[in-house]
Each structure stands twice: as structure tokens, then as C-alpha cells.
Length: 270
View 1 (cartoon, one colour):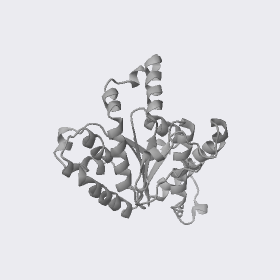
View 2 (cartoon, helix red, strand yellow):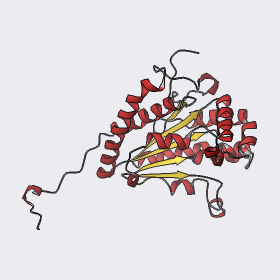
View 3 (tube, one colour):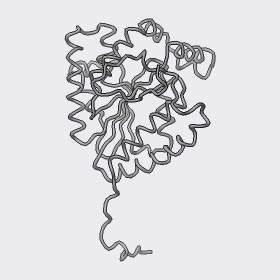
């Protein structure tokens, strides 16, 4: 494996997750080396989010997908630390309700996309409909197979409407997942995070890797890119995600709205 590992696969590249080392940490060797940059990113993100909210011209959609214990919740908590909660909405997509099943698979997703000025975060997403649905054979292959094009068209619509889309696959190894499961079993304060239902999913690890590979390969576009985030080291995972978010917001070249005229003439009455 080469020393340098891309975080964003090329559009059109056939993704093989075995080519991406989940222990990769780039130019950093430990948490302390990355701390200053992560702190700078958090400060910068606070400023950028305020301008995003004030300008009210753009929206940002952040999608997280991972295997169980991959760190979606933790990443959201650490990366978004200090950001004004009024400008952020986190959505978690579980098993569809009866009403949601009576609509197309994207209906519940579209309703939770961020409005202008907002950051929307999906903790799991529309990709569940080509992941868990595929692996567990909940619908026929011709049904989930058609969804890649539906997803690409849906994300294109969002992008054309002013939504910047970033999609992160938090890539952990099977061995690291086991360690995290054991930690949840050994620590009483983490017992609530362990579910016996995670074990049958772990047994289908290879099927899920194949499903993730196809989803990333077929739905990695310039307007909605996938990032394969090495996530065995939590500190590097957080740094990669924060770098990508800050970079995407800075590229929007946002400005605060022009103030009302003659503000210097206003007198505030006692």
C-alpha cells in the first residue's frame, strides 16, 4: 500500500475498501500533533457557520455512513463542538414508519434536507436503501439497483438548488469494531450503546463492505463527493471531517449581508 492515501476517491474510480487503510493518519503520528489544527478548524467553522446563517444563500448537507461503532455520533459531537445549534439540524434515519413506506424511499429524506442558511447532518441516510436493504434482501435487486440513479438525480437537484453536499464513510476495521464493542460491554457508562442486534450485522461484514463499495463507486460525483475517512484513530477521523467541512464552506466565498443605510444616524432611546 502506498504511503499517501487519498481521502476522496476519483469520480468514476471503482472503489475497493481493502485499498484504504483505516489506520492511516497522513502526516500525523499522534493526537497531540493534530490538536492545534482541529482547534483551529472548530474556531473557523463557528465563524463560517455564522456567515452561512446570516447570508441565507447556501445550505450544507453532511452525510455520515459507517458500520456499527464506526463513530458517527462521536464525530458529530467533536467536529461540531461550539457551533450555534440554531443553525444545525441532525437527522437520524431508522426503520421507516408505515407512512414513510407508503411513499418513495426518498420522501422522508427530502423533508429533512437543510434550508438556506442551515447545516443539515444525516446520521445514516438515504444510502441505507442500497445498504441494509440490499444486504438483508428487503426488496428485489432490480428495485435497489435502480436507486443509485435515483440518488444521483436527487443529489443533483439539491446541488442545483444551492446545497453543498459532503458524504463521509467512516472506515473502521473489523478488529477495531470488536474492540469498540468490548469497550461498551466492559464500561457501565457505555452499556446503553451496545445492542445484541449489532452482532448479526457484524456477521455480514463482507456483504456490507461490498454494498458500501458499490454505493461509493456509483454515487461519487463532483457535486456530491464521497470521502473515505480512516476512522480507527478517532482524532484523525475528526480532523479529516473538519478539514473537509471548513474547506467546502470557504469555497462558497460567503459575505455578511449589507447593513441597512445610515445606521450611524440611529439613536437608541432611553
